[in-house]
Each structure stands twice: as C-alpha cells, then as structure tokens.
Length: 124
Image 1 (cartoon, rainbow, N blue to C red):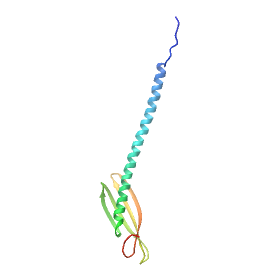
Image 2: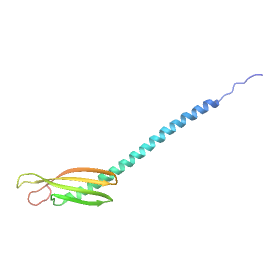
Image 3: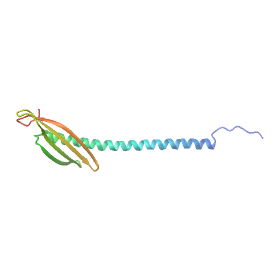
Image 4: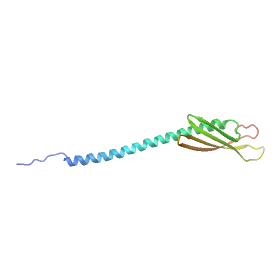
C-alpha cells in the first residue's frame, strides 16, 4: 500500500491553536473589564468635580462671609468652609474657600481663593 500525503492540520495543532486563542481572549476580556472600571471611576470623579465647580461658582458669586455652608446638589453632599485671610484695613479682602463633596464612599476636596473689594463686597 502506498501512503498518500495528507494536507491540513493535525488534531494536536488544532488544540494548540484553540488554547492560544482562548488565552488571548481571556487577556482581552480582562483588559476590557479594567477599562470599564476605569471609565466608571472617571465618570464618578467627573461628577464630583462638576458639582464642586457649580457650588463654588454659585456660593462664591455673591458677598462672602466667614462661616460654613452645607447642602446637597444632584444627590451629592457638600460642605463649604469660608475663611477671610488676614489683610490690611481698607484693602481688598481675600477669602479662602474649602469645599468637600461626598457621594457614598467617594469624597473629594477643593480649595480656591476669592478676592472681594473692601467696601462693596463685589468681586474684582
């Protein structure tokens, strides 16, 4: 009997190829899952930052007085501490605004300075 040469892949080669594909698929799935988690974290941080910007713009737009203000905006708790920094009499007043925003377990802190005229309290 004559043996004829057969073309194609053996069963062992097919199993090896499937194993390599399975390993690559798992690596890709893990990478996509990590990317999705990172996207969620960025989204939550962006939400806190947006609320912080809004609160500082709203609360810092009018006259400022030293003290603490609290509230809830879009389901996010916030606390704003306003302190007047020491300065000379008759000059513009400088205020430090410390804002803490908190949603569930996530918390962020922001600080800014606001300058107000000595007499009118209007922004410069």
